[in-house]
Image (cartoon, rainbow over all chains, first blue to last red):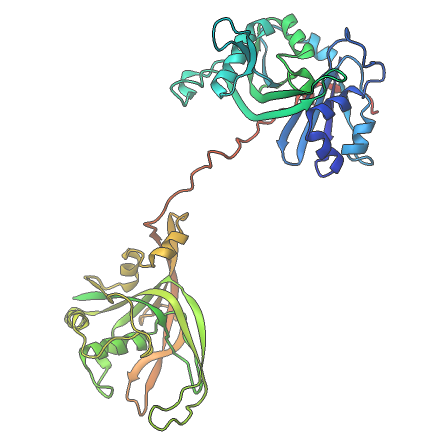
Amino acid sequence: MHLTRFRINTARQGARHLLASPQRLHAAVMSSFSQTLPSDTDRPRTLWRLDRNAKAEVLLYIVSQERPDLTHLVEQAGWPTTASWQTYEYGAFLSGLRAGDTWAFRLTANPVHQIRRKDGEPTKRTAHVTPRHQMGWLLGRQEAAGFRILATPPERRRLPQGDEHQLAVRDEHRLNFEKAGPPGGPRNRVPLVTVTFDGRLEITDPDALRRTLTQGLGKAKAYGCGLMTLAKAG
Amino acid sequence: MNSVLFLRLAGPLQSWGASARFARRTTETAPTKSGVIGLLAAALGRDRTADLTDLAALLFAVRIDQPGTRLRDFQTAHHADTDKAMPVSERFYLADAVFVAALAGDDTLIRTLHTALQAPVYLPYLGRRSCPPQGPLDLGVMDTDDPVQALSAQEWQASDWYREQRRRDRTVTLTILAEDTAHSPVGDMLRDQPISFDPRHRRYALRSMTSTQTEVLNPRYTPAVRNRHAPLPVPRHEPEALLSPMDGP
């Protein structure tokens, strides 16, 4: 497995073109793998995420089976003569994960649930729109995903409820764009709510967590959601 | 027994000359001792030629509560009766300034001055006849002999709009210009010690003054609240820090 980091030069027109549309960015990410053909469906998932740390510090992370070639991205939205991307070997890190370890994590996800408004109506996928429900979405998935989000010690809690876990939700984006349907058919609207979770976790099931880190968590993986990364807990 | 008399000197325009000659009538940045003594002598109803020694012996200090802005006026006045042109003059004023002046001296004299200010014989003005004071001058009397210390204890007298501008500051630093006593070090010299206001021959001696700073509370202080819509700071997250990079592309 590989983890790749690419810094986007936000001052360039090409970068703005890409950042404005998760579809275009997905296409750019997917076209960086020379071995994968668009018709391949049974390949392992490629995950990507944008970290908007500051206005001029936007980082693209890619987790993939294959080693990517981001030359086209450097040409459109990077620094062609001074900086390129950096790919890291991810497999050794993944196999070193042990139950009981504590890590800081970041995850950009699309927290949704299936609801029906009245009996007999088909269920519909609907986004969680409040931070409390968005946190609840992640907390409900943590066990199957192989980790447990750490609890805040009672003396460090600042709210009567809602900050029991070392977890923060921020950077919510509500996107609504059009996607081409089947040829000749109608165009589909894609409503999308993405949020970024930051927090600390403890590994409970290393195998499940490895799967989470490489296969993604939640929906809308094509639009930059589902990639979780671990960093040293400070 | 000594006490201190406080005056609030505020007005749309003020002009306090100490070194002006001929057609260029400048102003100092703070009220002068001779101007304030003149105001008090007028309140007492003293004649221009009357003896000033008791008033001139008072110890004077002034605090700059609101510095104001300097205003230049190019004056082409004509004589009211003969319509003859007066010398073209350049006059400087302080606009929108507020000061607190303190005069320390013998208790009986201070009380007399305080009473005279309640019902002045000649109307008071701020350095020049065309500059009337805004609001009451009188800020009361305090039993002490140190005018500088007494000024530091006075609350901030600046106008409300000016305090509002400084609402992010819990305290404001104000300058106090104090007349030096015989046993204090000699500061800046200013020809501002009144000897005679006789219109035929006004006379002033040199006096020295020292500038100090004081901090007063700002009653309009409102701490800035964090904008609830401002984004939260982004925590650092570097997943690649523990990974080994592969050879460059």
